[in-house]
Image (cartoon, rainbow, N blue to C red; front, side, top):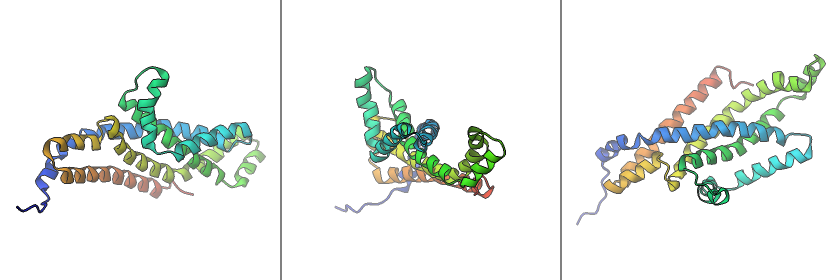
Length: 223
């Protein structure tokens, strides 16, 4: 009996229509979570550089906890553990978005901290000498320049978050990997299907990378 494996390209390309419904879920979870994570990151990032110690410590605790634990554990806690605390179930989509939000928020906090602290001291001093308040100097001078410096790192975090959604098949979210698992259960073509799943993730992340390079080329991510 010949047991030599032969890759079936027909099965691989035939799986694509069954995988495509997972793309909107992947994008919704990743970009929805990133939108919340961006504001969480700004909040805790600014707390992280606060001169007031009692404001810095909650930010440090948040950042270390969510950067130091796997996102898979975080989404399992949100989906299975948190409902026991609040007495109400949480659907898989909400759990996925929340996991991306709190996880990416921790990394974005450090991106914000690094971006703001990378600004030269003279920028702030020049702004104050022109009569701006500290708040105005930060809002109109420091933050716009710091944000431009953050764009490449924020884009990289976006790519990481898109790939992280592949872990959420464990809670039944209908993203790309979950769609692939469902299709494999009836066709037994794991090699072919997972190759197409990987290719679709590559197309998504590559497209985002091209967009980021365009932003940098236009000077939006300049020095």
